Figure 1 (cartoon, rainbow, N blue to C red):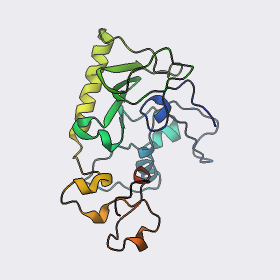
Figure 2: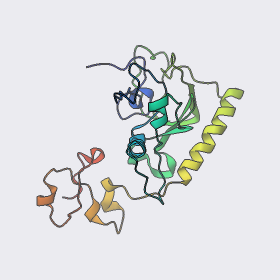
Figure 3: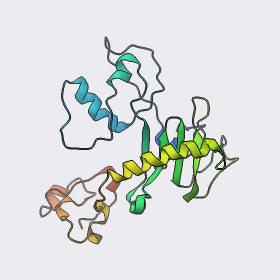
Figure 4: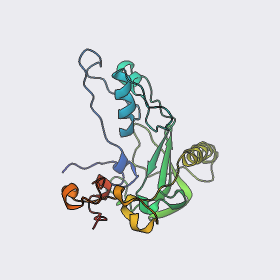
Length: 226
């Protein structure tokens, strides 16, 4: 198994070790070979990028978190994202707690953290899991990504960048309408159980009364239809 040194954290955390991974794109004749880009991107950029490259258009009347990366891929442009928003699971969804971290430019703030399981590269500093007050702020660069040396909360650097991040966080939260978790459909009162999560590949035959009952990665073990 490959490690993720020097990154902190692990799968399902919002530390860099849980959210950062490389991507490889190949398109002979269109995308130059052997090029390395540090432009930040996310998996939800794939949809708008493919739509743009295929000559399609995005359905109107919706809010899209993803950005078109075609300029990044074809001409080496910088990231189209001003900020990236890192959510954790629905268990932390109330009151904005699910939005655990926000990165704007090279600065990343953690409002809530999971156990970081510090590695050899960063065990010199760790923080208890839970709400971080004040939020932790880190400067991430190509040579420093371990999230070990935090920006001093008493500094002007901290105040100025947290102001930018705070505004972006508030605007992002304001654009989202809370919905009931599929994993807790029985607690939502009036929820349409047709959309509940069934962690069973044979749900169509086992639960014919819920024809839209589906399996999702987030609900792999959530047998809420039984």
